[in-house]
Length: 335
Image 1: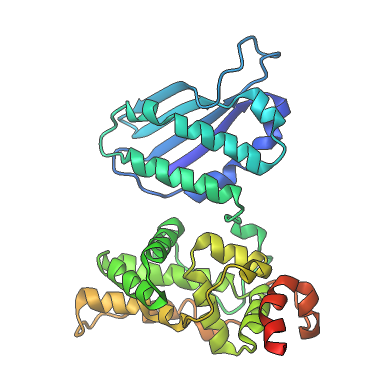
Image 2: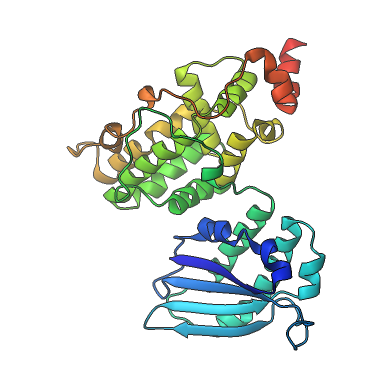
């Protein structure tokens, strides 16, 4: 499903909403039922001194249209111009957007669209806006200059959609008792999907892991664990990935984030066999079909990653480079 945020504003507010494309990207490909393929959400905020109408309250739905033949929903709601003009930060702007979005529920629910989970839609969009406001969402392309070498481009048709991949990871995190339990939950969830989806999970898992083959993450592993080798670095990245999308990319962008937000007593190696175990659980121990890990191996081999992304560092510089993380982990071990 495609979700697209658009804007209708006077020029004084235009730049305050320049992040809508990134917000739309975060929501793209979620599924809320077969009744809709596309949802357009338009945010309207117009200076009443320029256009002769009163400054409506935030959340007022001024347009809603459901086209059954095209499986499309379009709706426009107001953002109070005075509120928007006074907002000084992206977080304040997003708070107004979220306040308004929640108020539109009754109007959209009243349309009675069949095969559309309106409650899930409002829950997912609300969570996405809240995450975006906390900067838990970091556009991937802003973090990396180049992909690590030794990686063939993964076939798009084989991969699981990223939003679905992360939704599965984050659901398992919410339900887990501990890391081992999370691994069991992932195996169970994947085994209920199609064979193609299980293989697709492995492809996307490898692609996402490659994003953390980064000097920032290597520094975090060195500080937290006290040492790194190829295997321990891989397992460390798996541990980060298991915490969900926002956590994962926030940690790559700024390892100091891990000073207050990381569980260290887990073994990330469990993540490497999730897809294979789910595949076997689905098809049985005696299946002769190629396991997901073997299928994906020709495209991306963990042992062939050669070039770290990001800025190189010297170990002596780590206390100054990541002071909070160093204070949290290394100062204790040195004391």
